[in-house]
Length: 395
Image (tube, rainbow, N blue to C red; front, side):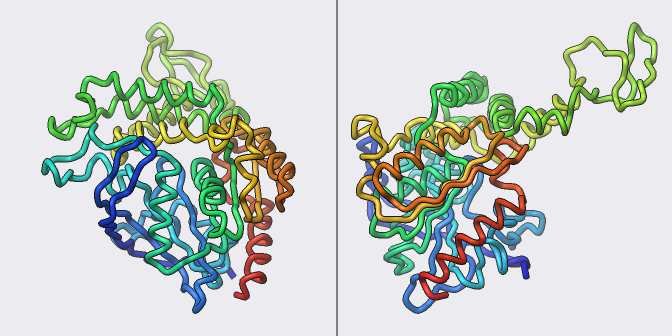
């Protein structure tokens, strides 16, 4: 029977050993915020790493101790009796380097200067995150994960784990993800970054010193991103062409509603008029209150750079040829950000290398965000897969 993990408290883990980054620089000492659920068994064989997507964090499941309204971003997936059952597995969530939820990032103080890193924080990659996560595993005495799992950008990390540390991954679950971004996806990220970079309050990334936040740029960036997370079908169902106001003024005269939830008249202005506009502005405003602009730049660039086949002539099968994990790849039919065709690229490369892979394409109307939502077919699939893993590791 499913139940909540309950109140959870993260821990801050400090790593004194410098971390060599892909860009050639070194991060000398850093902190990572970590949250764990369940109990690690005697032989440490039941550990699962859950990797987060762009605006998520270490807080995967449960209720934050300091805020009862803060529910973990994948709480419907992780917990007692849930698809990833914490009665059986020890689950770890790590907030990645460069993020703004407690791990070392642009908002952190640079010990060398006594001021926030700001624009000086190095550009990081998915591979850098995986190397940092490996040190978390070492600290817990985990030599091999029963599974590494993630959706979207988290799926990229899971895939990278299976390539970079093949002997340390039993199963790799890649959900609503891609082996690399398309030109269109890179373009969306660039428009979002441009909105932030052009905000007068950005100050070259050192806005902390000016006591301001580039909220306008962040709002637009989030609005752009949010459009890509939803399908046309989902947006039509949620909003259609419904007008924001129940009454509209046309030439100064009140227009009556037409009986179907919309008004016959427009206000002929550039203020919020349609429900979908109101929704996007609300999402943008909310995001700008809690997310850091420099972090947004860093994480979207990490998305852009991810391409494990790049160093082997673009041959994904060759990049995966040394992996030993078993794979579950999941996509969603209406996800146009990371379309099913991109997941099938991963599946084909794995089959070409004769790896063990299961693939599911879930017919769901919710677009990219479907991986975060409760869908019985999707959740039952993941549950069955973890039951198989549980049998393998004896939990």
